[in-house]
Image (cartoon, rainbow, N blue to C red):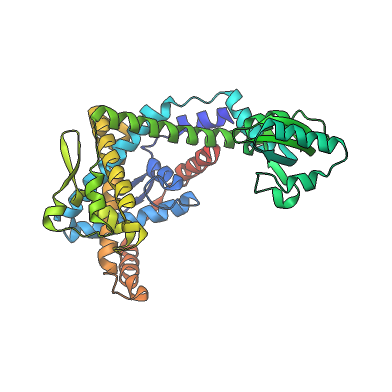
Length: 400
């Protein structure tokens, strides 16, 4: 499999042209991004479907150009924001995610945390003397189920202490270590837990097989890398906040209550300073309105949500600054995707304007867009390089 991936990677350059719409190229890299869902849209199922989506973007973007949309300051700002997003994502992928290391021991530990399972019966009490008293009563013929009715574990107490099948990773670490060594059917304990002391017995146990691990290893590695990368991104952002001395004016946000729309003065209020530039309430308002759908007075317009949105805007600015400082706005991979990013923004903006506002009936909302796209397709010449698409498909399957 490794040799297949290497051979395909060498054979297929991201600059290879997978299709053309009239004279506009659709690059293999764009098709790959569309398949992975890394263009800010739903992933396509097949390379052919990805080309169909991208061809529609090319046609709609061309129409947007003819209508002068790039001259609109809001559209130009959206294009700049998308280009910066590309640079930031490339920075994170290379500088943060690229530092993730996953060794064999970590993969095996994660596999067994889910694949190893015991059928567990337990009684949890507050102290070790209580646990030893239970063990004495059970040794004299007492009922495990009757003792379990007073267990502190509300999950198993109503079932006579039976927790059912439990994966290794779902157990308290001390209980997991004991349960996977205990004789089947024998009451064991006491085991000191993070919360309480346990008396338990295992009535069945299964251990993940080596063959199952081998079959799942590639997927496990992807998942563990993703989880590790998410943790590293969180730690990196925490460090950036600290380094920049960023503080959020949460008192002001609490004072807004559940209101979303500010007065002019409130809109200008500085919530934080990032890289020497102010982040004002007006800067977080578009994200707030999008999240809450403009509805004031609900949970999604409260101070906690406002603070979360504000931090997300702050974090984005911190990452954007770090990416620019490291020169990722000029990265070759970013440059390769610039034209596609611009097309995507223009196409989406045109679609939004064709669909009208929220007051437009849903059935009418898409009619104008569908009609325009059909007309544009009828006039266009779309050609596809099947060999390049096949290579894209092979590489996509090999790296999934």
